[in-house]
Length: 91
Image (cartoon, rainbow, N blue to C red):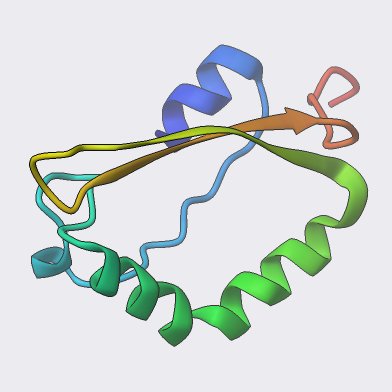
């Protein structure tokens, strides 16, 4: 993902690996609500520090969520907007 963000938008990107490999059904899908909650709880200090450092450079806006009626999977849609991060034009 980081390589794609850099190549597509010319914005440096770093992804924090949260959770363990066995917490996920696939690369980005957490296996259940409790696991997702525990990953966030266990990494809260790191997440809060990261969001505080980003400050007002990005904006998060919840868009929608969809619960799969046949499982415990919930899809969450969030619009993330760059409102101040460098685009490397001046580099």
